[in-house]
Amino acid sequence: MHAPRNPALQTGTVYGVVLNDRGSVERMGAALIEAPYNAEPKAPILYVKPANTFAADGAQVSLPDGAEKVEIGATVGLVMGRPACRVAAQDAPACIASYVVAADLSLPHASYYRPAIREKCFDGSCILGAPVAASRVVDPAGLCVRTVINGVDADQFELASLVRSVPELLRDVSGFMTLSAGDVLLVGVKWQAPTAAPGDHVSVVSDVLGKIQFSIVPARRQETA
Amino acid sequence: MKRGRIYFNGAVHQVTLAEDGGVRLPDGTTLAEEQAHWLPPVQAGTIFALGLNYADHARELAFKAPEQPLVFLKGPNALIGHRARTARPHDAEYMHYECELAVVIGRHARNVSQKDAYDYIAGYTVANDYAIRDYLENYYRPNLRVKNRDGCTPIGPWLVDAADIPDPMNLALSTSVNGKVTQRGTTRDMVFGIPWLIEYLSAFMTLSPGDIILTGTPEGLANVVAGDEVATEIEGVGRLVNFLADAPTSSSSSV
Image (cartoon, rainbow over all chains, first blue to last red; front, side):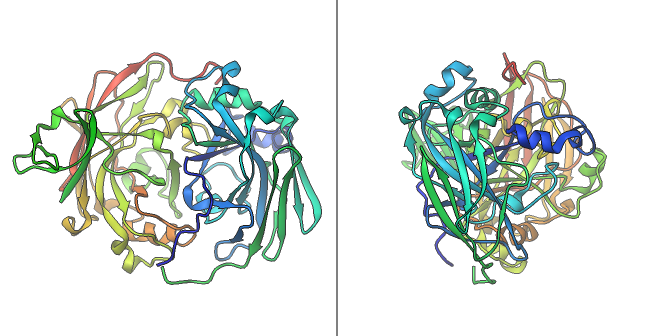
């Protein structure tokens, strides 16, 4: 038996959302109205990053056995300061205590049809930065996070490109489930985000929210549970 | 031993099953089941749920039983205790119950083999994993709008020690609506059994005490409406009662 790999201070539930940036929706294009989806999404497409995935700046993340690369879903997390239940868009900002820069790691999965638990819930796959008070974020739509892999810029995610803006996302998610104080909502990750492999060093950087750094390390071999 | 958590007289109490079938507080006071406000029997960690994990239910939904388990997750907002009310959106056409054996993890588990899996289980309880099929979409299906609604996963009343359930893979399950039995099955018919699921999940993630695995439901789904009393029961584990209530609005207007 060993201690759980959960060095981060996060204690609430972390939810994420896919297909919430216009670029990903455009790149998937007509596939969204073909099988197996058969229709464009109506509600936000959510997933859960459970407690075993939480990691902090400086993490060394090992991939599940057999995985050779991992997508780096650079994004921003909204940390709730009070419960959000059926909030109107104009009331949504008051529910947000702080923002964090975040990296949602996923094994590549081409399809969004079924929940991707093995791909998204392996240990250490949700790296969260230090919270920055919401009062310091003048306009969340102006936020941008860059992904840097081994010192080379790999991607950029601008919250101006969101399908549902931060207030609209909180309105629509809280329309069917309550987010509690301490819960985090990641505002979106790109479809087919850039990948890293064991040995790579990754940074996710925001001018306003700061930076997280982590390394991808080879799979842990079978160990005593 | 059967253990529960209730709210009574201004405080939360850990309770046990009394000899007369009631609820025993730590100070020896006993209450009738109906006198307590029941909470979920454990403080939930990660909540896993299985879809299509009974071959007959998969057939009922016109799916071939999967070769890989269909696992999805919920947040703690979904859970409510025994004898609570679950909101039914009044514009929903089809909301159904799902009687499920819930496995509660008792120790940190990583890379656990099937043969050792039972050593990591604290106990068992009953869950009713309601679904509102009107909101199904083919993205990360079953999507959270169907499966992670506030209070749509009643659980309890008791956490039954693992030692008291010698064979959790051979228990009768049933659901009754307003006293009439509508769903019957046995945990023998799970496609992916409990030891297999613990091996599968712990191969890529660390399970922790308080994590809960809802193991899926057999066939026998039926629509339920506001005012219905739904009782999900598992042999030796417990009988979980839930009441459906009308909810004024289902969701935000934009979706």
